[in-house]
Image 1 (cartoon, rainbow, N blue to C red):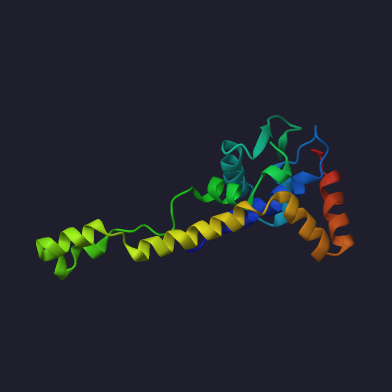
Image 2 (image 1 turned 45 degrees about the horizontal axis):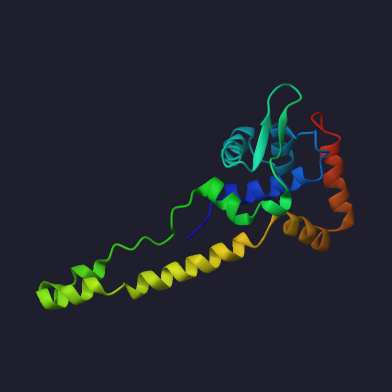
Length: 167
C-alpha cells in the first residue's frame, strides 16, 4: 500500500493556508514555487481538495485558495480520501471459496458460511490506520511543526506567503 505524493503535497500546502487572514488566499503559483512542484500537478490536487470541501477556490487575478473549514476539522484522513479516494486497500475476492476442498458441497457450504479470517484481519488493520489518520488534524500538524521546526523556518515560511501577491 502506498499513497501518492499528492497526499503529502496536499497536507504541506494546507498547513500554509492556516495562518493567512480570513479574507485572503494563496495562489497555486506561490504554493507550487514554495514546494518546488509544477503548478499543473498542484492544481489537480487542489481541484480534489476543493471538491471535497477542504479548501475553497476564489477566482480572479487576486484569487487563490483558503481553508473551507477550521483546521481542527480537517483530518489527515479527509485529505487522503480527497486525493486518493476511499477505495479499501485490501479487496477480498473470497478465494477460500474456490479451493479444492470446496468441490465437496458440504464443505463448500461451510466455507461460504464462515467469514474470511484474512479479510477480517486486513479490514481491522485498515480501520486502525484510518482511525489514526482521522485523529490527526491540520491543527495538530501545525502544532507539531511548531515543535519540530526552528522558529526561524516557521517565520520565514509565514513571511513568504504573507509577501506573495495574493495575500
